[in-house]
Image (tube, rainbow, N blue to C red; front, side, top):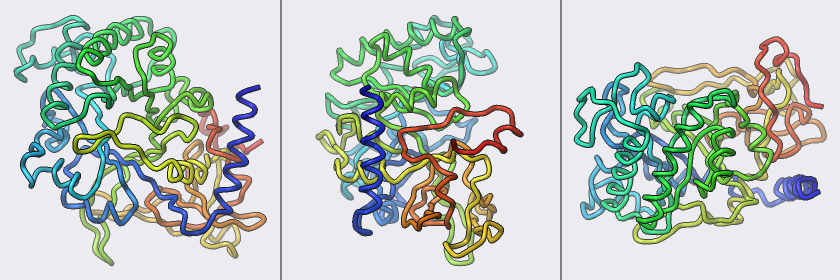
Amino acid sequence: MFLYLKLVLIIAFASLALARPVSAETRVAIIDTAYDTRPYLDRLQERGVTVIGRYYARCDQPEYGLTEKRLINQGRPSDPNSETAQMFAKGFAVLSVYQYYSNTPNKFRGQNRDGTALPDANCNWTGVGRSVEEEAELDVQAAIFQAQALGQPRGTAIYFGVDFNFTESDTETIEGMTRYFRVIKSRMDAAGFRTGAYGSGHAHQILRNAGLIEYSWISASRAFSRTSAFHRSGDWHLFQNQVDREWFGGRGSVCQRGLPLDTNVQNMFQPADVGLWRAGERYFVDEGRTFDIFATRRFACDGDAVVRRDKGSSSSEVAQMSACKAGQVKRLSPKIDFANAARVGEATDTLIEVDVDDDGEFDGWTHHSNLTAHFGFKPDWIFETARRNATSCE
Protein backbone atom coordinates (compact mmCIF):
# COMPACT_ATOMS: atom_id res chain seq x y z
CA MET A 1 0.00 0.00 0.00
CA PHE A 2 2.84 2.41 0.85
CA LEU A 3 4.50 1.85 -2.54
CA TYR A 4 1.17 2.44 -4.32
CA LEU A 5 0.64 5.71 -2.45
CA LYS A 6 4.19 6.79 -3.21
CA LEU A 7 3.67 6.20 -6.94
CA VAL A 8 0.41 8.15 -6.84
CA LEU A 9 2.28 11.02 -5.20
CA ILE A 10 5.04 10.87 -7.82
CA ILE A 11 2.53 11.15 -10.65
CA ALA A 12 0.75 14.02 -8.91
CA PHE A 13 4.03 15.81 -8.21
CA ALA A 14 5.17 15.30 -11.80
CA SER A 15 1.97 16.93 -13.07
CA LEU A 16 2.52 19.83 -10.68
CA ALA A 17 6.13 20.23 -11.82
CA LEU A 18 5.12 20.50 -15.47
CA ALA A 19 2.56 23.14 -14.50
CA ARG A 20 5.11 25.20 -12.55
CA PRO A 21 6.51 28.41 -14.00
CA VAL A 22 9.03 28.09 -16.84
CA SER A 23 11.57 29.73 -14.51
CA ALA A 24 11.68 26.55 -12.36
CA GLU A 25 15.24 25.17 -12.53
CA THR A 26 15.00 21.60 -13.81
CA ARG A 27 18.57 21.25 -15.12
CA VAL A 28 20.77 18.87 -13.13
CA ALA A 29 22.36 20.15 -9.94
CA ILE A 30 24.83 17.27 -9.45
CA ILE A 31 27.54 16.03 -11.81
CA ASP A 32 30.57 13.81 -11.31
CA THR A 33 33.82 13.90 -13.26
CA ALA A 34 37.31 12.39 -13.21
CA TYR A 35 38.84 15.62 -14.54
CA ASP A 36 40.03 18.95 -13.16
CA THR A 37 37.05 21.30 -13.20
CA ARG A 38 38.88 24.61 -12.76
CA PRO A 39 38.72 25.64 -16.45
CA TYR A 40 34.96 25.02 -16.48
CA LEU A 41 33.64 26.29 -13.16
CA ASP A 42 32.03 29.45 -14.51
CA ARG A 43 30.28 27.54 -17.26
CA LEU A 44 29.14 24.85 -14.84
CA GLN A 45 27.55 27.60 -12.77
CA GLU A 46 25.81 28.92 -15.86
CA ARG A 47 24.35 25.44 -16.45
CA GLY A 48 22.89 25.34 -12.95
CA VAL A 49 25.35 22.84 -11.40
CA THR A 50 25.87 23.25 -7.65
CA VAL A 51 27.55 19.93 -6.69
CA ILE A 52 30.58 18.26 -8.29
CA GLY A 53 31.43 14.64 -7.61
CA ARG A 54 35.22 14.21 -7.36
CA TYR A 55 37.41 11.28 -6.50
CA TYR A 56 39.66 9.87 -3.84
CA ALA A 57 41.95 6.93 -4.67
CA ARG A 58 44.90 5.22 -3.05
CA CYS A 59 47.20 5.95 -5.99
CA ASP A 60 47.04 7.37 -9.49
CA GLN A 61 45.96 5.15 -12.38
CA PRO A 62 47.93 6.58 -15.33
CA GLU A 63 47.37 3.48 -17.46
CA TYR A 64 43.70 4.51 -17.64
CA GLY A 65 44.59 8.12 -18.47
CA LEU A 66 43.21 9.23 -15.11
CA THR A 67 45.94 11.70 -14.21
CA GLU A 68 43.43 14.26 -12.89
CA LYS A 69 41.05 11.86 -11.15
CA ARG A 70 42.33 12.26 -7.59
CA LEU A 71 41.06 15.55 -6.19
CA ILE A 72 43.99 15.81 -3.79
CA ASN A 73 46.39 15.97 -6.77
CA GLN A 74 44.91 19.34 -7.67
CA GLY A 75 46.09 20.95 -4.42
CA ARG A 76 44.88 21.55 -0.86
CA PRO A 77 42.25 24.15 0.11
CA SER A 78 44.96 26.30 1.72
CA ASP A 79 46.23 27.00 -1.80
CA PRO A 80 43.81 29.54 -3.33
CA ASN A 81 44.66 28.18 -6.79
CA SER A 82 43.74 24.58 -5.92
CA GLU A 83 40.66 22.96 -7.39
CA THR A 84 38.90 22.68 -4.04
CA ALA A 85 39.60 26.32 -3.16
CA GLN A 86 38.36 27.45 -6.56
CA MET A 87 35.21 25.32 -6.26
CA PHE A 88 34.44 26.64 -2.80
CA ALA A 89 35.10 30.24 -3.84
CA LYS A 90 32.39 29.87 -6.46
CA GLY A 91 29.94 28.19 -4.09
CA PHE A 92 30.20 24.59 -5.31
CA ALA A 93 29.82 21.61 -2.99
CA VAL A 94 31.58 18.24 -3.28
CA LEU A 95 30.22 14.71 -3.59
CA SER A 96 33.11 12.49 -2.45
CA VAL A 97 33.69 9.21 -4.28
CA TYR A 98 36.39 6.60 -3.63
CA GLN A 99 37.36 4.39 -6.55
CA TYR A 100 40.57 2.44 -7.01
CA TYR A 101 40.39 -0.50 -9.43
CA SER A 102 36.80 -0.80 -8.25
CA ASN A 103 35.62 -2.00 -11.67
CA THR A 104 36.27 -5.70 -11.07
CA PRO A 105 35.38 -8.30 -8.40
CA ASN A 106 39.12 -9.05 -8.32
CA LYS A 107 39.27 -5.93 -6.15
CA PHE A 108 38.19 -8.07 -3.20
CA ARG A 109 41.27 -10.21 -3.78
CA GLY A 110 43.53 -7.17 -3.91
CA GLN A 111 43.95 -7.56 -7.68
CA ASN A 112 43.20 -5.75 -10.92
CA ARG A 113 41.22 -7.24 -13.82
CA ASP A 114 44.28 -9.15 -15.01
CA GLY A 115 44.79 -10.77 -11.63
CA THR A 116 47.88 -8.70 -10.78
CA ALA A 117 48.26 -7.75 -7.11
CA LEU A 118 47.47 -4.06 -6.63
CA PRO A 119 50.05 -1.54 -5.37
CA ASP A 120 50.77 -1.18 -1.68
CA ALA A 121 50.21 1.91 0.48
CA ASN A 122 53.22 3.57 -1.16
CA CYS A 123 51.89 2.87 -4.65
CA ASN A 124 54.55 0.27 -5.43
CA TRP A 125 53.63 -2.72 -7.59
CA THR A 126 55.23 -5.29 -5.32
CA GLY A 127 53.28 -8.29 -6.63
CA VAL A 128 52.46 -9.25 -3.04
CA GLY A 129 48.88 -10.46 -2.57
CA ARG A 130 46.62 -9.48 0.29
CA SER A 131 43.32 -10.43 1.88
CA VAL A 132 40.09 -8.52 1.34
CA GLU A 133 40.47 -7.01 4.81
CA GLU A 134 43.99 -5.81 4.04
CA GLU A 135 42.83 -4.28 0.74
CA ALA A 136 39.93 -2.55 2.49
CA GLU A 137 42.27 -1.16 5.16
CA LEU A 138 44.52 0.39 2.53
CA ASP A 139 41.54 1.94 0.74
CA VAL A 140 39.76 3.33 3.76
CA GLN A 141 42.98 4.76 5.20
CA ALA A 142 43.63 6.56 1.91
CA ALA A 143 40.03 7.79 1.73
CA ILE A 144 40.04 9.17 5.27
CA PHE A 145 43.49 10.75 4.89
CA GLN A 146 42.52 12.53 1.68
CA ALA A 147 39.15 13.62 3.07
CA GLN A 148 40.78 15.12 6.15
CA ALA A 149 43.56 16.75 4.11
CA LEU A 150 40.94 18.47 1.92
CA GLY A 151 38.88 19.62 4.90
CA GLN A 152 35.89 17.32 4.44
CA PRO A 153 33.78 17.76 7.59
CA ARG A 154 32.84 14.92 9.91
CA GLY A 155 29.28 13.74 9.38
CA THR A 156 29.53 13.85 5.59
CA ALA A 157 29.88 10.87 3.26
CA ILE A 158 32.32 9.05 1.03
CA TYR A 159 30.78 6.73 -1.57
CA PHE A 160 32.89 3.63 -2.31
CA GLY A 161 32.62 2.17 -5.80
CA VAL A 162 31.40 -1.33 -6.66
CA ASP A 163 31.40 -0.63 -10.39
CA PHE A 164 30.74 -4.05 -11.94
CA ASN A 165 27.90 -6.50 -12.35
CA PHE A 166 27.35 -9.71 -10.41
CA THR A 167 24.45 -12.06 -9.76
CA GLU A 168 23.10 -14.14 -6.89
CA SER A 169 25.27 -17.06 -7.96
CA ASP A 170 28.47 -15.03 -7.50
CA THR A 171 28.74 -16.01 -3.86
CA GLU A 172 32.49 -15.36 -3.68
CA THR A 173 32.00 -11.78 -4.90
CA ILE A 174 29.12 -11.20 -2.48
CA GLU A 175 31.14 -12.52 0.45
CA GLY A 176 34.19 -10.46 -0.54
CA MET A 177 32.14 -7.27 -0.94
CA THR A 178 30.49 -7.78 2.45
CA ARG A 179 33.83 -8.36 4.19
CA TYR A 180 35.32 -5.33 2.40
CA PHE A 181 32.53 -3.02 3.52
CA ARG A 182 32.64 -4.28 7.10
CA VAL A 183 36.15 -2.87 7.35
CA ILE A 184 35.19 0.31 5.48
CA LYS A 185 32.16 1.01 7.68
CA SER A 186 34.04 0.35 10.93
CA ARG A 187 36.91 2.70 10.06
CA MET A 188 34.61 5.37 8.60
CA ASP A 189 32.45 5.36 11.73
CA ALA A 190 35.52 5.74 13.93
CA ALA A 191 36.71 8.71 11.84
CA GLY A 192 33.29 10.38 11.96
CA PHE A 193 32.43 9.92 8.26
CA ARG A 194 29.36 8.24 6.80
CA THR A 195 29.55 5.40 4.30
CA GLY A 196 27.88 5.23 0.92
CA ALA A 197 28.23 2.90 -2.04
CA TYR A 198 28.08 3.42 -5.80
CA GLY A 199 27.01 0.43 -7.84
CA SER A 200 24.21 -1.88 -8.96
CA GLY A 201 20.87 -2.33 -7.30
CA HIS A 202 22.02 -5.81 -6.24
CA ALA A 203 25.06 -4.39 -4.43
CA HIS A 204 22.90 -1.82 -2.64
CA GLN A 205 20.33 -4.38 -1.51
CA ILE A 206 23.00 -6.59 0.04
CA LEU A 207 24.95 -3.78 1.69
CA ARG A 208 21.84 -2.02 3.02
CA ASN A 209 20.41 -5.25 4.44
CA ALA A 210 23.72 -5.87 6.18
CA GLY A 211 23.72 -2.36 7.67
CA LEU A 212 27.03 -1.54 5.98
CA ILE A 213 26.04 1.63 4.09
CA GLU A 214 23.91 4.68 4.82
CA TYR A 215 23.69 6.05 1.28
CA SER A 216 22.99 4.40 -2.07
CA TRP A 217 24.10 5.86 -5.40
CA ILE A 218 22.84 3.76 -8.32
CA SER A 219 25.16 3.46 -11.30
CA ALA A 220 23.68 4.16 -14.73
CA SER A 221 24.43 0.68 -16.09
CA ARG A 222 20.96 -0.40 -17.24
CA ALA A 223 21.69 -4.12 -17.45
CA PHE A 224 23.22 -4.51 -13.99
CA SER A 225 21.48 -6.98 -11.68
CA ARG A 226 18.45 -5.67 -9.76
CA THR A 227 19.20 -2.05 -10.65
CA SER A 228 15.76 -1.26 -12.03
CA ALA A 229 14.03 -3.04 -9.15
CA PHE A 230 16.10 -1.15 -6.60
CA HIS A 231 15.33 2.13 -8.35
CA ARG A 232 11.61 1.33 -8.20
CA SER A 233 11.89 0.55 -4.47
CA GLY A 234 12.70 4.20 -3.80
CA ASP A 235 15.40 3.22 -1.29
CA TRP A 236 18.17 5.02 -3.19
CA HIS A 237 19.63 8.50 -2.63
CA LEU A 238 21.38 9.31 -5.93
CA PHE A 239 20.91 7.97 -9.44
CA GLN A 240 23.50 8.38 -12.19
CA ASN A 241 21.24 9.69 -14.92
CA GLN A 242 23.60 10.06 -17.88
CA VAL A 243 27.18 8.85 -18.38
CA ASP A 244 30.07 9.67 -20.68
CA ARG A 245 28.74 13.07 -21.63
CA GLU A 246 31.09 15.90 -22.58
CA TRP A 247 30.14 19.52 -21.98
CA PHE A 248 31.69 22.71 -23.34
CA GLY A 249 33.37 21.07 -26.32
CA GLY A 250 31.58 23.19 -28.89
CA ARG A 251 32.31 26.82 -29.71
CA GLY A 252 30.23 27.82 -32.70
CA SER A 253 31.38 25.68 -35.61
CA VAL A 254 34.55 24.56 -33.77
CA CYS A 255 34.62 21.23 -31.93
CA GLN A 256 37.26 20.90 -29.21
CA ARG A 257 37.82 18.88 -26.07
CA GLY A 258 35.44 19.68 -23.23
CA LEU A 259 34.75 18.33 -19.74
CA PRO A 260 33.77 14.61 -19.65
CA LEU A 261 31.15 14.07 -16.96
CA ASP A 262 28.10 12.18 -15.75
CA THR A 263 24.87 13.72 -14.49
CA ASN A 264 22.97 12.65 -11.37
CA VAL A 265 19.50 12.96 -9.89
CA GLN A 266 18.75 13.05 -6.16
CA ASN A 267 15.75 11.16 -4.81
CA MET A 268 13.11 13.65 -3.65
CA PHE A 269 11.56 10.97 -1.41
CA GLN A 270 14.72 10.60 0.70
CA PRO A 271 16.09 13.13 3.22
CA ALA A 272 17.89 16.12 1.71
CA ASP A 273 21.14 15.11 3.43
CA VAL A 274 23.10 12.81 1.10
CA GLY A 275 26.51 13.53 2.62
CA LEU A 276 27.56 16.51 0.48
CA TRP A 277 29.99 19.13 1.75
CA ARG A 278 31.87 22.32 1.08
CA ALA A 279 34.38 24.44 3.02
CA GLY A 280 33.92 23.39 6.65
CA GLU A 281 30.21 22.57 6.40
CA ARG A 282 27.63 20.09 5.23
CA TYR A 283 25.66 21.00 2.13
CA PHE A 284 22.11 20.27 0.99
CA VAL A 285 20.66 20.83 -2.46
CA ASP A 286 17.54 22.98 -2.13
CA GLU A 287 14.56 20.64 -1.67
CA GLY A 288 12.47 22.56 -4.19
CA ARG A 289 15.24 22.17 -6.75
CA THR A 290 15.51 18.45 -6.03
CA PHE A 291 11.75 18.16 -6.49
CA ASP A 292 11.84 19.96 -9.85
CA ILE A 293 14.72 17.85 -11.16
CA PHE A 294 13.21 14.53 -10.07
CA ALA A 295 9.72 15.36 -11.26
CA THR A 296 10.84 16.38 -14.77
CA ARG A 297 12.63 13.14 -15.64
CA ARG A 298 11.08 10.16 -17.43
CA PHE A 299 12.40 6.82 -18.67
CA ALA A 300 11.98 5.58 -22.22
CA CYS A 301 9.78 2.48 -22.09
CA ASP A 302 9.40 2.17 -25.86
CA GLY A 303 12.18 0.52 -27.86
CA ASP A 304 11.79 3.11 -30.60
CA ALA A 305 11.27 6.38 -28.72
CA VAL A 306 11.83 8.67 -31.71
CA VAL A 307 12.60 12.34 -31.07
CA ARG A 308 10.97 14.70 -33.57
CA ARG A 309 12.44 18.05 -34.62
CA ASP A 310 9.58 20.11 -33.19
CA LYS A 311 6.03 19.69 -31.99
CA GLY A 312 4.69 20.14 -35.50
CA SER A 313 6.92 17.48 -37.06
CA SER A 314 5.89 14.04 -38.20
CA SER A 315 7.61 10.97 -36.77
CA SER A 316 9.83 10.86 -39.85
CA GLU A 317 11.11 14.41 -39.28
CA VAL A 318 13.62 13.50 -36.59
CA ALA A 319 15.79 15.78 -34.48
CA GLN A 320 19.33 16.31 -35.76
CA MET A 321 21.35 15.80 -32.58
CA SER A 322 25.12 15.90 -32.22
CA ALA A 323 27.76 16.48 -29.57
CA CYS A 324 31.44 17.34 -29.39
CA LYS A 325 33.38 14.50 -27.82
CA ALA A 326 37.16 14.22 -27.63
CA GLY A 327 37.42 17.03 -30.17
CA GLN A 328 35.18 15.35 -32.75
CA VAL A 329 31.56 15.79 -33.75
CA LYS A 330 29.50 12.74 -32.82
CA ARG A 331 26.07 12.30 -34.35
CA LEU A 332 23.52 11.17 -31.80
CA SER A 333 20.69 8.77 -32.50
CA PRO A 334 17.38 10.63 -32.89
CA LYS A 335 15.72 8.61 -30.17
CA ILE A 336 15.85 7.99 -26.44
CA ASP A 337 17.47 4.64 -25.72
CA PHE A 338 15.31 2.11 -23.90
CA ALA A 339 15.40 2.54 -20.08
CA ASN A 340 17.43 5.74 -20.40
CA ALA A 341 16.05 8.90 -18.83
CA ALA A 342 15.29 12.24 -20.43
CA ARG A 343 14.36 15.62 -18.99
CA VAL A 344 10.92 16.78 -20.08
CA GLY A 345 9.60 20.29 -20.63
CA GLU A 346 6.58 21.77 -22.35
CA ALA A 347 3.83 19.43 -23.52
CA THR A 348 0.95 19.23 -25.98
CA ASP A 349 -1.86 16.67 -25.84
CA THR A 350 0.30 14.11 -27.65
CA LEU A 351 3.94 15.29 -27.56
CA ILE A 352 6.39 16.43 -24.92
CA GLU A 353 9.68 18.33 -25.18
CA VAL A 354 12.78 16.31 -24.23
CA ASP A 355 16.40 16.95 -23.31
CA VAL A 356 17.88 13.58 -24.30
CA ASP A 357 21.48 13.98 -23.11
CA ASP A 358 20.77 16.06 -19.97
CA ASP A 359 22.96 18.96 -21.09
CA GLY A 360 20.32 21.56 -20.23
CA GLU A 361 19.17 22.12 -23.82
CA PHE A 362 15.99 20.58 -25.22
CA ASP A 363 16.64 18.46 -28.30
CA GLY A 364 13.16 17.93 -29.72
CA TRP A 365 9.80 16.32 -29.00
CA THR A 366 8.62 12.76 -28.44
CA HIS A 367 5.25 11.11 -27.98
CA HIS A 368 3.99 10.85 -24.40
CA SER A 369 3.50 7.12 -24.94
CA ASN A 370 7.26 6.66 -25.41
CA LEU A 371 7.94 7.58 -21.78
CA THR A 372 7.01 6.33 -18.33
CA ALA A 373 4.46 8.42 -16.45
CA HIS A 374 7.00 9.33 -13.77
CA PHE A 375 10.65 8.94 -12.73
CA GLY A 376 9.80 6.49 -9.95
CA PHE A 377 9.32 3.67 -12.46
CA LYS A 378 12.46 2.41 -14.20
CA PRO A 379 11.79 -0.37 -16.76
CA ASP A 380 13.61 -3.66 -16.45
CA TRP A 381 16.35 -4.07 -19.02
CA ILE A 382 15.53 -6.37 -21.95
CA PHE A 383 18.62 -8.25 -23.07
CA GLU A 384 17.30 -9.52 -26.41
CA THR A 385 17.85 -6.69 -28.93
CA ALA A 386 14.92 -7.49 -31.21
CA ARG A 387 12.48 -7.77 -28.33
CA ARG A 388 13.85 -4.62 -26.71
CA ASN A 389 13.48 -2.62 -29.92
CA ALA A 390 9.95 -3.93 -30.45
CA THR A 391 8.68 -3.28 -26.91
CA SER A 392 6.24 -0.51 -26.07
CA CYS A 393 4.99 1.12 -22.90
CA GLU A 394 2.10 -0.76 -21.35
